[in-house]
Image (cartoon, rainbow, N blue to C red; front, top):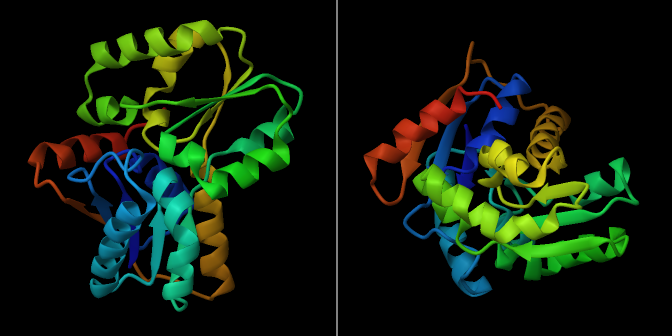
Length: 246
């Protein structure tokens, strides 16, 4: 069994890519919307929350855990790997290196939570590949709007916060919620190139499972959905997003 955790349903964008790798495992998807957002919490708060979810997933029999939240990944993964050395952790990170590989001279906008942008993990990545044409934009409140699914409020937010960046070439979607609004972002910024870490995470999970000789006997995958807030509407939207395409 494989666990996937996120601060809400945004990590469905990661799970969709994982399923494209043909990993026919039993999955538990843990949506922690009760504690959403993680980006405005202290590192100690985030770690305590995420550790509790990890303990829950391990208790349910998960042999690998995918951290599909950029903030949780940036803050927690190093410590989790130290405290749980026998558990395989696969962690997402903002796809800033992908921009460097694709268009190193282009002007780039990194959209992420404040927690991700301020994290040591992201800043190390940023300082390594920064071409001095990059804008870091903390998108406070955007993940919550996407979680709620209010299109009008999402579009108003994007118009208010992105319209000044119409000369951008690349946009890094540094939160797993943001790929769910790619079309909305393009309506404001035009035909920009969008990058997110979902594909890289899915490939790394498949690679690590192969390296460890871990296989699954299931003929198809199955997904158990858990939301910490107990809001039944979350699962309905999650299931719809899981089977949808871009």
